[in-house]
Image 1 (cartoon, rainbow, N blue to C red):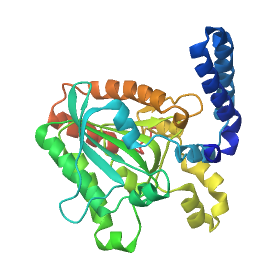
Image 2 (image 1 turned 180 degrees about the horizontal axis):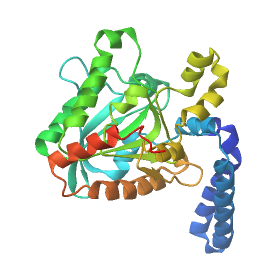
Image 3 (image 1 turned 30 degrees about the horizontal axis):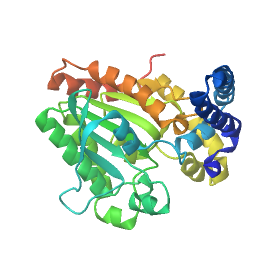
Length: 317
């Protein structure tokens, strides 16, 4: 765990670890409760002070944190009756996108999300969360199934981008992404997308053509990574910090620009510090957002989605 602590979060992470230790003691001996309450208050205050001053690039690093909850972590906490569906019925199953049927607050839904791995073996299996064309074709299969049976679609975005390998290009990477965008645009069911980590380029947008888009507090959403942007614009990857600031990819910027609709506050120290609490907070925002579209007809949902994306980039002086 220590190796996964980012330099700027170290003071907060150390306090959070002390809180956990004291909480276990307080569970056995109530005399520790006052000390625990004081330590939790100090930890929260320090976290707010430190995290309020984070640079855009530091927030990008948080969005990539190795301990951050991934799609399957949220599925385990938010849904019941989860049944994963695999394969694109053309070539293979891509493990960097997971999807299937589940029950959410008593409603049947279709869930699709990017999935990264923890550890070398799982990262190879999940291709570091970078989908191949068959991953997007699996997503299309699920979008169309949801439309056919009238099931809401909930997506979870967390990828640095689509896999740029030769094999992926040979099998139609750009066509698969474009078809996923089109499939999402035309389905007559409510779609809620949540950026839970790093949302990069078209590889992320293939899961993002939604009626409403949520973003976790320390997630980011961009057309290109800061490192890639710096390398293209200035031929200097060391200027990634500057690129991150100019790209306007953090949650507050995304909300101000209308790219996302809601920011979901993360637990003290970030979602990676408390997966359960992160899921509780996301659950509240997700259910409220999904319920707000009850009563809209399929035609109204498609029109709502169309108007939302047509409005991006429009400003009145």
